[in-house]
Image (cartoon, rainbow, N blue to C red):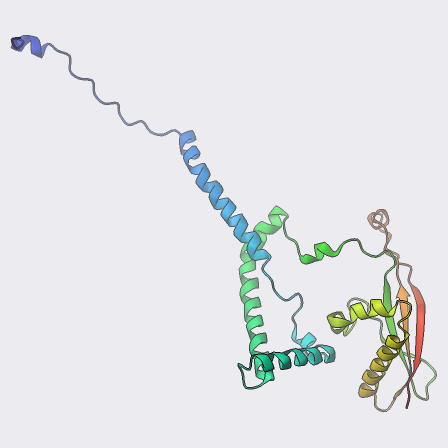
Length: 251
């Protein structure tokens, strides 16, 4: 076939131009960014919640470490640990190093926790292990310890063991379960030993007024029901002197 004449070739329409690049709509940009934003939020949420529940000592204070009960148990623990892992010259050095490490961890932990706390509080997902405490007892009993010094007529209150009283941190360290057990029937010998323990503590602090008797008793409280708490009724109706036990202390 012969080629087209030159005039006819020039009469052909020009080829269509490629379509101009269309600008993406706002909805399409959001559709592409949404998965990345969701992934970023979920990652931040997981990081916040995981960091927030990292373990740390529930109560760690130099005043608590100075209490006799705490010092005694910590001394036994680090003495045993030093025998198994003698990485330091003495048990005291090992205790100091480990406690310094705990203090360092707590400083780092609480500094980082401040970053996530605004989000956790705004989302309403802050919590502590206290949430697993369960239903409070309806009639809780609190042990009261009194000492009658030799030659005196009145018992002297030593410890009422209510929350917030002096030395209550030391009592929480190990004594709470003991108080529950000593309130049961059939633990007379253990109550005698516990009374003698408090007599020794009293005598060490008051050598001029040695203990003649130690009285262990319980103050029973009432936990108000929810409807009373909502109405502002907070009367716990304490009953003093419940389950009293008196131990004579030999001179």
